[in-house]
Amino acid sequence: MAGYANLSLGADQSPWMVHADAHEDFIRDHKLCLLEKGLNPDHQNPSGIKVALPRTWRLDEQVESQVTDEGLVNFYFDTEHHMRKVIENAHIPIADG
Image (cartoon, rainbow, N blue to C red; front, side, top):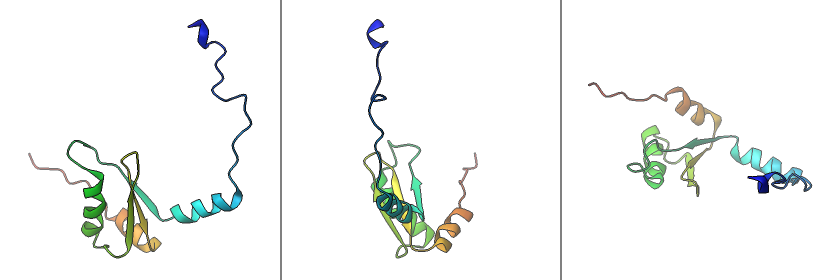
Protein backbone atom coordinates (compact mmCIF):
# COMPACT_ATOMS: atom_id res chain seq x y z
CA MET A 1 0.00 0.00 0.00
CA ALA A 2 2.96 2.33 0.41
CA GLY A 3 3.01 2.79 -3.40
CA TYR A 4 -0.29 4.66 -3.29
CA ALA A 5 0.80 7.21 -0.69
CA ASN A 6 1.73 9.83 -3.31
CA LEU A 7 -1.12 9.14 -5.73
CA SER A 8 -2.59 12.43 -6.98
CA LEU A 9 -5.13 11.29 -9.63
CA GLY A 10 -4.65 14.49 -11.59
CA ALA A 11 -5.03 16.83 -8.63
CA ASP A 12 -1.71 18.38 -9.59
CA GLN A 13 -3.03 19.39 -13.04
CA SER A 14 -4.91 22.56 -13.88
CA PRO A 15 -8.72 22.20 -13.90
CA TRP A 16 -10.46 21.48 -17.18
CA MET A 17 -12.59 24.43 -18.24
CA VAL A 18 -15.74 24.29 -20.36
CA HIS A 19 -16.38 27.25 -22.64
CA ALA A 20 -19.33 29.33 -21.51
CA ASP A 21 -21.20 28.91 -24.80
CA ALA A 22 -20.86 25.12 -24.67
CA HIS A 23 -22.12 25.13 -21.09
CA GLU A 24 -25.09 27.31 -22.05
CA ASP A 25 -25.92 24.97 -24.94
CA PHE A 26 -25.82 21.98 -22.58
CA ILE A 27 -28.14 23.69 -20.08
CA ARG A 28 -30.59 24.68 -22.83
CA ASP A 29 -30.55 21.19 -24.38
CA HIS A 30 -31.11 19.43 -21.05
CA LYS A 31 -33.57 21.82 -19.39
CA LEU A 32 -36.53 19.70 -20.46
CA CYS A 33 -34.86 16.31 -20.07
CA LEU A 34 -35.82 13.34 -17.91
CA LEU A 35 -33.50 10.39 -17.33
CA GLU A 36 -34.70 6.82 -16.94
CA LYS A 37 -32.89 3.64 -16.00
CA GLY A 38 -34.59 0.28 -15.80
CA LEU A 39 -34.62 -1.32 -12.37
CA ASN A 40 -34.01 -4.80 -13.74
CA PRO A 41 -31.60 -4.58 -16.70
CA ASP A 42 -31.85 -8.34 -17.30
CA HIS A 43 -35.50 -7.90 -18.31
CA GLN A 44 -35.76 -4.23 -19.33
CA ASN A 45 -33.69 -3.08 -22.24
CA PRO A 46 -33.16 0.65 -22.81
CA SER A 47 -34.24 0.46 -26.47
CA GLY A 48 -37.61 -0.95 -25.47
CA ILE A 49 -38.05 1.67 -22.76
CA LYS A 50 -37.16 4.38 -25.29
CA VAL A 51 -40.10 3.34 -27.45
CA ALA A 52 -42.60 2.28 -24.78
CA LEU A 53 -42.66 5.23 -22.39
CA PRO A 54 -43.57 7.98 -24.88
CA ARG A 55 -46.44 5.77 -26.08
CA THR A 56 -47.56 5.20 -22.49
CA TRP A 57 -47.48 8.95 -21.89
CA ARG A 58 -49.35 9.52 -25.20
CA LEU A 59 -46.57 11.90 -26.25
CA ASP A 60 -45.06 9.97 -29.17
CA GLU A 61 -44.63 13.07 -31.31
CA GLN A 62 -43.65 15.48 -28.53
CA VAL A 63 -40.74 13.55 -26.99
CA GLU A 64 -37.37 12.66 -28.45
CA SER A 65 -35.22 10.06 -26.74
CA GLN A 66 -31.68 8.81 -26.74
CA VAL A 67 -30.04 5.75 -25.16
CA THR A 68 -26.67 6.51 -23.56
CA ASP A 69 -23.63 4.27 -23.31
CA GLU A 70 -24.41 3.79 -19.60
CA GLY A 71 -27.82 2.28 -20.37
CA LEU A 72 -29.80 5.38 -19.42
CA VAL A 73 -32.58 6.75 -21.58
CA ASN A 74 -32.75 10.53 -21.96
CA PHE A 75 -36.20 11.89 -22.84
CA TYR A 76 -36.23 15.40 -24.31
CA PHE A 77 -39.59 17.17 -24.17
CA ASP A 78 -40.81 19.90 -26.54
CA THR A 79 -42.50 21.87 -23.76
CA GLU A 80 -42.34 22.15 -20.00
CA HIS A 81 -46.07 21.37 -19.92
CA HIS A 82 -45.49 17.90 -21.38
CA MET A 83 -42.67 17.14 -18.96
CA ARG A 84 -44.72 18.31 -15.96
CA LYS A 85 -47.65 16.20 -17.12
CA VAL A 86 -45.43 13.10 -17.08
CA ILE A 87 -43.94 13.93 -13.68
CA GLU A 88 -47.29 14.72 -12.06
CA ASN A 89 -48.88 11.53 -13.39
CA ALA A 90 -45.93 9.32 -12.49
CA HIS A 91 -46.81 6.34 -10.37
CA ILE A 92 -45.40 2.95 -9.59
CA PRO A 93 -47.92 0.18 -10.12
CA ILE A 94 -47.87 -2.36 -7.29
CA ALA A 95 -49.17 -5.82 -8.05
CA ASP A 96 -51.80 -7.17 -5.71
CA GLY A 97 -50.55 -10.14 -4.07
